[in-house]
Amino acid sequence: MSMVARQIKRQEQTEVKTRKVIKHRRAGITLGEKVLGLMMVVAAFAIVSFMLHNYATIYSLNKDVHVLEGSINNQTQVNEGLSLQVIELSAPDRILDIATGELGMSLDDQKVKVVQN
Image 1 (cartoon, helix red, strand yellow):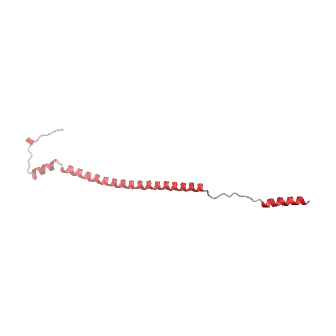
Image 2 (tube, rainbow, N blue to C red; image 1 turned 180 degrees about the horizontal axis):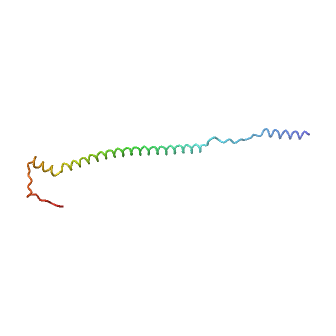
Image 3 (cartoon, rainbow, N blue to C red; image 1 turned 30 degrees about the horizontal axis):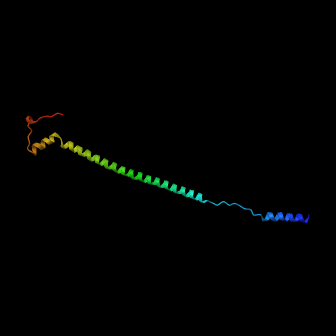
């Protein structure tokens, strides 16, 4: 081989060796991806917090409803007892006994007037 051919061959080899291979490395996570991820985490946390708050409120209201239903049942029983007492105390025979015995009143059929509605 001639000297010129060897020089050209050496130049090609040195050019091949001296070429730098540029590799594009991609960053792991970009800033935009980090921001989007953070926003998704915050939104998920807000949704979960809102749901828990609603469940707690519903539980509290249900508890109050049960307490009120219990007090309504108790008051209904008291009212039924009092209405039975009213019926017993307003019996005409009892009123007549108290009027004649304790108050000294007498029943005069001539002076009694019956009013009909």
